[in-house]
Image 1 (cartoon, protein in one colour):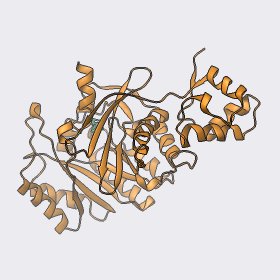
Image 2 (cartoon, protein in one colour):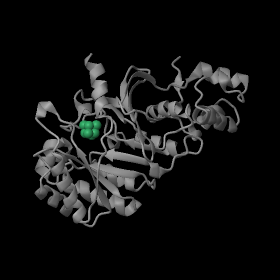
Image 3 (cartoon, protein in one colour):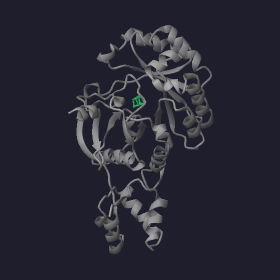
Image 4 (cartoon, protein in one colour):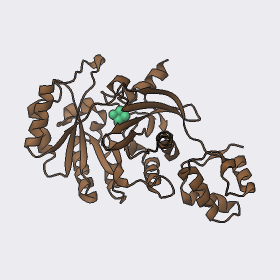
Length: 347
Ligand code: SF4
């Protein structure tokens, strides 16, 4: 008999499981606490569960998490990238960054990605499959367990690893809700950021969920033609529709939407484009995060000079757009998503 993986199940689901076996409801809560609060994966260690139930769990269920295949640490010790593998052999990358404001992790929502963004290594081998809520939670617990050894924890989460989270909507939403549950990690929704390439209908849907997470939208160009070149999804969901949906999200949730903008030398970094970007976001509760690109040799793309980066940033700031330039972390360990996984796929 195939064992059922219960990691990633909600309290109502666990309660249904145990009551289906004729046991009282509170056994579901105890099971959730062992699995999520105490991070125990071995049923035999769940001491307050009756022996019969422990045996039944061993025979029918498994708590399937993720195993580490590889790890790279940056020289400055601030960033670690993990290649984690699930029981079917599918691997994903998860990144831990020690930020001034706490421990931030970057979680993958799909193995690979089929969005085809031209600057991204995650999409080179296409998409293998969606990840389940349990698999996203397993990435989180893998790192949280590591941090707990030194009395720390995961403080903030960005769903910005490989994959387009809004095309794996139900699993991603279940994961975010689980993070927030008191019996799980009890994280505030405000400490979670979802990053999308702009799946318009699901941005509107997310705004209705009444979970005030941060939304980050990959924009990368202030006009349609260039954006389609950089991000093929723009042909399906054009830039103006994406920005309108972002405006709706900001208005409904009162959360500032962040527009990610990769700066590529001579492609999207001139002052005219800074002006167009300013026009585009006028009146929105928005901010822009500029990300100077890591050079992509195959495409001849380079990082703009510091003067060009500063000039672009200055133009936005002077025109009342909240703007930040992403701090560079872990360049020496290929922090750009997908690169470590690709290395293993190609080996
Ligand atoms: S940037 Fe994000 S959406 Fe685009 S291909 Fe990479 S993982 Fe997919």
